[in-house]
Amino acid sequence: MPSVALPMEPTPYLTVQSALQQGTELLQSRLTAEVLLAHAMQCDRAYLYAHSSDPLTQLAWIHYGRYLNERLNGKPTQYITHKQEFYGRDFYVDQNVLIPRPETEHLVETGLQYIKHHNPTRILDVGTGSGAIAISVALESSRTIQASDISMAALEVARRNRKNAPVHFFQADLLEGVAPQSIDLLLSNPPYVPGADAANMQTEVRDWEPHIALFASEDGFQIYQRLIAQAEAAVKPKGRIMMEMGYRSLDGVRAMLEPRWTSIEVISDLAGLPRVISAELR
Image (cartoon, rainbow, N blue to C red):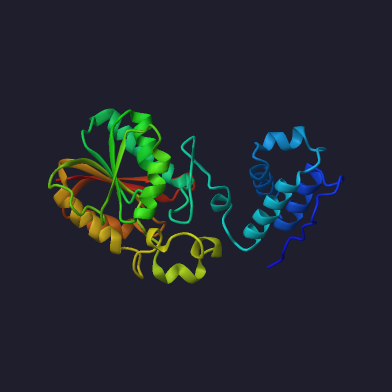
């Protein structure tokens, strides 16, 4: 991987603009260079253009060089800046949690519509990770949400993100320990990437994001099978389950739901791919 040569002292001619140009050439991405330089300078991106002729401080240049090296070595930008926007809010992320994707906002929106029209009492987000789903739903609906994860490290990140959101986090392997017939609405973005697909994934995903949050057996269905089976005991009759799906998951997940669940609905993402599946327990 290329490395970034840093002078011991920034020269008087090393301005914000020239630093940004160097970063853009190295990364082949103006946007990423802007994000990393703004992070190094502890400012927003608009500041870079309002102060483009300002000299870069030694400390900012050292941080910027380190961030560029990390990005060139494959580290996702979000893990460098510890920030990812989701549903209009910034969330702290590190390598203990999956980086929230825009596609997952469809699960939040589907859950919010259900809450608006059906007024569920107990709502649980399973496999919460950064807490992005549970916190977004709680803040948008003004409801108290329960959220679980098997990883204590992930729960530490989620609690950091919680701030004033009415979310209660607890450690559990899926629905382990959840009382029978106690859940009105179950939300989950479970691991669904087939292990067989690992070799073809982007290296920055495969090598940096937590495998426990990505992969689910060789075919990608193991967690769906366990979650749906446990949900049939934990969800109230007429209660609802909503899960995010991979682009090849629909037929398999629908087949798992059909014996015990009804009113199955599929919500597509902006690319037209089936993204969320929702069903009511008979």
